[in-house]
Image (cartoon, rainbow over all chains, first blue to last red; front, side, top):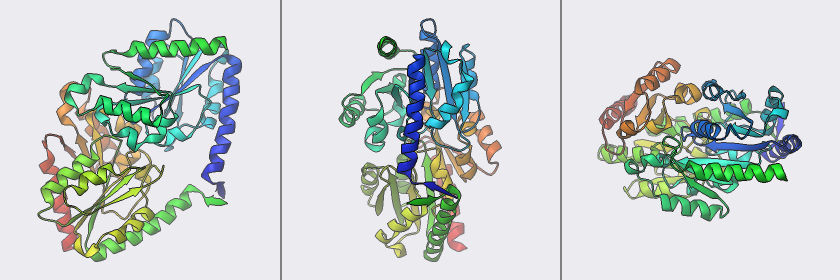
Length: 219
Length: 219
């Protein structure tokens, strides 16, 4: 039993991601792929984003985890349709996993789909899933050296959420260095410094996101 | 061009790791494989461990990073031989990478080799490198749900360092839940709650480590 080399695997994934994208375009569903290290605050950002926007958009969520359903249960409490993908050891979501999850939604009843990837600052950046935008989170306790150490995710993302600014007094995080190094990898990166815990700074992210959804739905 | 399926890749890796292990046994070098999410405090633990033990043991370090040499530069300042492995996108160290790094050391002049893996709570747990013990770090800002979400690393590790206890007043971290869930996955796990920043709790880790090295060198 043989499998193809990585390049071909990625080519095959790109084809499936493009198929997903065609479905999302047809159904006018704006899709984000949310990525970060474990514990950077992805699920809390999902919750806060849903609470702020669920009156304006019909939102769905795909939760990617190696195992368990605890993030999906958190989201389901908000009354949002949510599908759990358990990768069974796999370190990232890919196009095929998203394709397999779609029949669980009524796609005619969705404007905005949030996919929360497996917590991993490396591998998820390599796999398209048919998203409109990749969104990444870096939290202040992780340190400002992360753009230099994990450049691909910074390069592939449209937005960098710098989360846990409420911890800034207690951690050694050089905000200016983090921003500068991230922008040197990806000059187009939009950066929002926020605390998902206190909601400080979240409005900038919500405004950006609403603007993107509006442009997409007109297009 | 074809590559083997994952199982065979892991078998091949196990053979190389066993070869490394035979070299370490012959040279009486105790080896740890240090793993965690990005930013959990691996390099700071390496620095503090070297500072505490470099008068008793001849220590060497292998730094694993996707790119850059900033961790290796931090360690080199302590006057310790250090080799940087850049994985070039790869999300973990494997046996072959360690084998390739060994000629850069004078193995007759080492008692203790610290390998710091790529920051990733998923993939490194699957790849043996010839270590005596896998050591993992979970930091309090990451949250107490991580054992349930990333079980393999907790299962494979001999020691869990719960780091950044200095941040406990500012983060929602349930220490008892983290310990209980980790032990339910791996009842043999030794757990040390520490702050690598303030050095609180580090003595327990250093005593355990010194004991292991002593037993190994006698054996």
